[in-house]
Length: 443
Image (tube, rainbow, N blue to C red; front, side, top):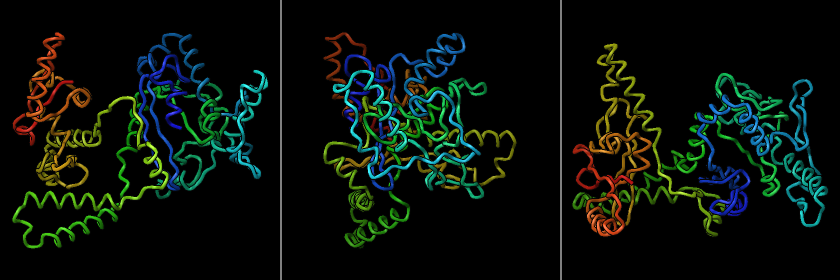
């Protein structure tokens, strides 16, 4: 289904425009719900779409551009049944109940065929069919999931629904005067946003959102990509697996563990990782998806991973440390004495402020990666010294010096023929843990 969506609806890599426009790129992650069913969260980049700030400026400068943008958005994002022309009210403020169906669920209704009907007949049956699907799949009723993260003292009501279906409506698409964000027309208080063509094709619950502000872009990027890195092993299960791995290592090596410390340490780590991975639970739908060639994500390009949370905490604690130094209170707080520690130095509380280290387990080798170290201790030569964090993560790569020598020999021969400029090289600062092993290459 996802491949069909990419090929038919988005038409990525194919001539012509897709349903939403010319698709430049996409990134989607697959998640299993509590019941095991799979669903995909996907980001789509469109060719020619301006940045959020540029789009905001264009809409403020040109009334026609604003009207065209609103018209385009309303053509692809629906928040009401097809044919609805006025706001649907909820008498007495009571939520409208979702329609109930008989023996046959709308999901099994046969879709009208454009080849068997006249244009007018198809349009009429199309609207009826889509509306039945929307009532079945996108008409929201509050459940326990809506208040999954409810704080103590908060009420289980519309205002605290984490799906943000609070009964509110919008008679027309507008620009929020305070935030500058686009607020899409919503004529029905209980129907989640959908696209009618996609609903017609997939007959399933869906949501669609236009990313019209920088804040929304960052939030949705984090929301979607978080699924690909989300830990699926609970803490107590992980600790039990770790204890099992330690016990197996002791039984295997006993008193001779330190006789060959390097080999045995590597074996202990591999035993730990394998023990933890063997206790991860996945649904049978995920298993079948992998067996038939599916995966946990779909991407048009190779994307680099940015561990934003670690950098965000690093900036926060450095900012707090600077403020404390200016106020003269830093020395009075022993817990912040090593707040900026990186790579093996003790941190004040040993909690979330510590640097994030990733272990790379290769065939016969184990490596450690720290993006904070890589960026902070990057080469002081150009162009690396002037790169922002975003540029560095996206444009620089690490390779061993042996691989670099082999690559340079090949590229010198090729570039001499093609007349290409050699890519920039640079070494990490001597304080970097991998200074003697790797170099950075500007891609």
